[in-house]
Image 1 (cartoon, helix red, strand yellow):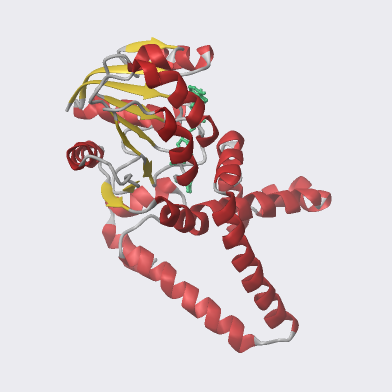
Image 2 (image 1 turned 135 degrees about the vertical axis):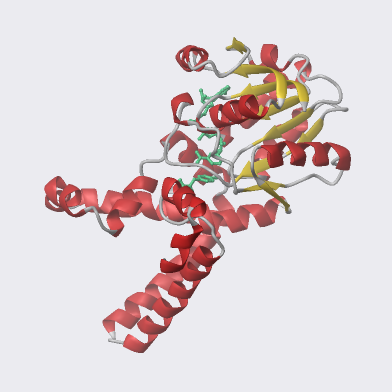
Length: 310
Ligand SMILES: NC(=O)C1=CN([C@@H]2O[C@H](COP(=O)(O)OP(=O)(O)OC[C@H]3O[C@@H](n4cnc5c(N)ncnc54)[C@H](O)[C@@H]3O)[C@@H](O)[C@H]2O)C=CC1
Ligand SMILES: O=C(O)C(=O)Cc1ccc(O)cc1
């Protein structure tokens, strides 16, 4: 599909892309750039690319497609660094979990004639680094684009084809809408997980042995999310601040209402909410979407006969 693809950042997402690009033969040359020499060496040991550099500007030279896969707080610095080296007509995209901030950081640096198309694959795990990636990560997952008003439809179609070849389904939306939706379905769950695991850890006696001993239950799901990369999630929180605060305010209001129902013994209210949420879970399972840990999601997707049992 492309003569040369440059991957800037070779962690979970960048290395998964490298693997699927290689498997599907989507590029003649895969140029890999990352800031840390250790990470670059590891990427080379894993044989993820065709060329390796600690200079992103060097890697993007002559590339038809440049994919920036770094923590969202670094996207402006990366755009500034690579801008002078980008080939006219190249497609420049990213995979960041927030879109408004990434656009604000990158767009001012994008040269005339380069097609900048912000993107976000809704696929990941709590792991990070080049060893954590795998070629199947994007299979049956959404990839959302938040095109700009001047986005070239042909470039958007080419990038969509690329992501389809990686196994993803494509959707487009407005960046503000993306940030609001992702705040509730992805950012809040992580924040809640970090918080509950932190609270449990503050209760020293509970955590010393009990967390490990009894964590085969719901708490374990929270510890998985709370093991996610600290740099990545710090950046998500700082760069989707408004939407996250808006969703946290609603969440706190609803939590207070739940607290009140428990205090006043309003069993009907509790039962109604729990019935409503159970329906949502079942509809997700019926639609064949991911449940529990990503690996489990894939197992279920591969064995749809198990879906009905929930
Ligand atoms: N981890 C996940 O589940 C998902 C992450 N994302 C987004 O993808 C992006 C990358 O995340 P991961 O691959 O998980 O992170 P990661 O921590 O596994 O990898 C990040 C990579 O970026 C490199 N890097 C950091 N700053 C850099 C800079 N200034 N210049 C060049 N390279 C730099 C690091 O060396 C590393 O190779 C983030 O923006 C994140 O929000 C999107 C979907 C899912
Ligand atoms: O590990 C999980 O459950 C995730 O939710 C992965 C994830 C993290 C960040 C994203 O922007 C998209 C997906």
